[in-house]
Length: 167
Image (tube, rainbow, N blue to C red):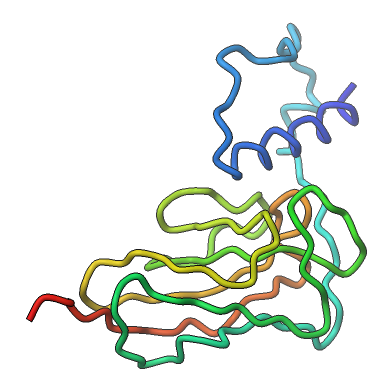
């Protein structure tokens, strides 16, 4: 029973990470009796291996750039390929943009919120609205279920300044 629940849990977490609205009632009923085995350790999700030498990076903007909003961002990847969420092509993943935040828990699917922007469609560039001021940006590659690879593929964290367009 436990082995069947983990893939369902991983899928539910991945869908939630994509920003999909969760069902109002759980699909599966919770077990009525907890066993010592299920209470002893939390479930761990499988992590996809990354390739040696693979990396993700910003093509633009560069660290220290002053830009206007919307900010044009181009993602780079070497040593692996980009594939949409749900596509389990070997040695692939999709980009996640971390804005003004540190790395999330690398053992769980990447959250989906204003600080963790998902590109599950396989995009390699975007334009994003940012308030004037200083912002940090970092990339994190996620696998088909939005779980960071092992070892995780992260870019350097860069700092940009968004200038006000009103003079």
